[in-house]
Image 1 (cartoon, rainbow, N blue to C red):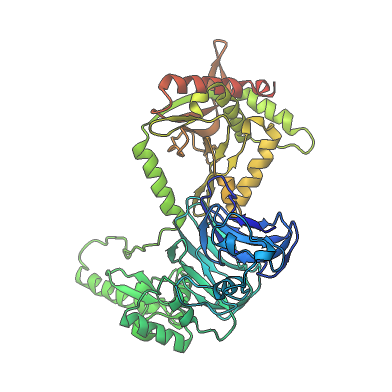
Image 2: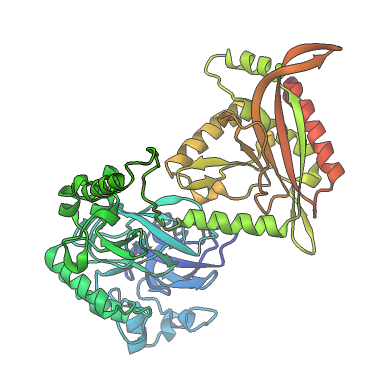
Length: 548
């Protein structure tokens, strides 16, 4: 009897899925455990395996199409079995003796080679794949192409990295699920586009790309006459697309990306370079042939003339320079950081509490632990462990504000802020209260290392209930942080310093560290925050209590 396969729910937040690729086609034999398709969820693209055996009789969702969870994905059954009742919403399969001849429509639905495009009545040629901007995180609304690792005309194998795509959380490698020739790039390096915009097209060489694009529901943006002219010149001379830079007089300079990079490397002000390309465009040879003396000579001449006119005046040494500025496009990560932190700062009423912790015992405990073979923990690991233990005793701090309700999290997931080249990411230690110090140390080192080389997955940056931000290693004594919502609090960790302290009525040299807790006053009252810090200090000043 035929089995109906519905669109599975592959994550807790998934409401609909997109079939990225079918690994079986209608008419193929399917064994239990075979991979049927690759399905793109709201968090990742995942392989979906079959729990049934038989013949793939029907595909309900074409490649590239999306559908809600529980929609008809496929039907598996016996070869030749009548499934018209299932396709039309029937509750059961017709018996063999009542089987009717297949209609033309049914034949069309079960033909292996049929592939329908987004536009009704038109078809994408066989073997051509339209790649869309993927949703690489649950909060991603648009992506920026940081780098293309393939160019138009390159051959692409399944599994090759096509591009590095910058999301709101990280820059991630995006691999191809298809083999063929890269026919078209829809989003250039540095440009941003919403999720599901056409990213690229892969298929056989010689495919009419315009016909494929015209079949898509999203038409290519029209270009101005000037842009078309510049593009034609670029294509004819095989030069790069034009970038623009800002000159000192406010006028736009046309400059190729390569020339711009060469100028930055050599410290050349583009405002002083005369472009020899079309429309005054600055190209590679202009930077190679640029001579600073050509600019310096007139300045020197002017200076000499001025000096002659004021010979009788006392010599005055005035700074000589040139004002300038350059506008850099904000990265997707930077824009999202600005948006999220602004929302947090302006919606959550922040207040701050600071304590000073005696770190003498912590230093001794850390030294003893690190003397053990193959063991290495940092002061930050001690802070993370102490926070997790303190959250167990003060659940009010481990909450989230939801308007009409407050969510009390029964689990403790500690986010650790990590500075990366383009901004800040927060990998999350899941169930941190259940981890030992050495486990915390190993996990933080692994997550921070992969964060800096942009290898974190979206799942590793989601779900925090509390956050720790440490700038002590940069010598910062004390600072305040903006709450990482939906958390109710974030701890700012300063540097450990030696200073005079009073012990047993006498002045002695001590090691102290300042901790500042930022709290959301909607969920955490001042007394609650203060009690949390008292517990945190007790753990930090007596680390052995965290091991009990």
